[in-house]
Image (cartoon, rainbow, N blue to C red; front, top):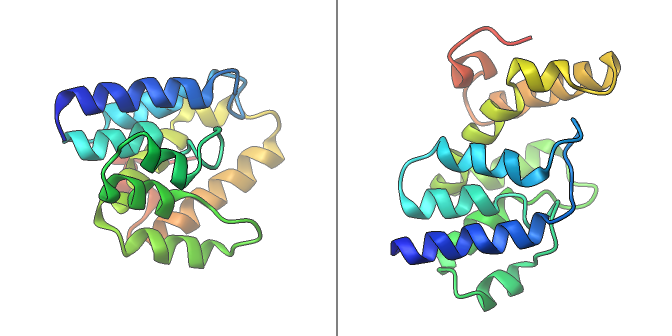
Length: 154
């Protein structure tokens, strides 16, 4: 992927996340940028900035293809997109099967488990529920959240 394509991914993501906020009330695009900066390589960075563009943004796999992203980038973003009523085990199996998606998912979990983000959750029940979800997702990726973060979490 040429550098211009990564710039295009950033612009598409900014448009897809426009007006959206995360659980902490912050602009959603900020999370996507942090995940992007946590991975190496233009393809991984394009996937990272777009990783929630379908689930939390306004994109579809077809619209990403229409933006001329490579099939590998679109496939990884699609793999990272949770389906309605899908068990976590099924979602993580799909992510594990795509090396690019798995790299980005680890960065996504690392950002989601930042202490300041956990502390900013709306209530302790949400924080505990999300932390348990992140821990289980890491286990299903074949690792632990502490290992992904390089520190004890929670």
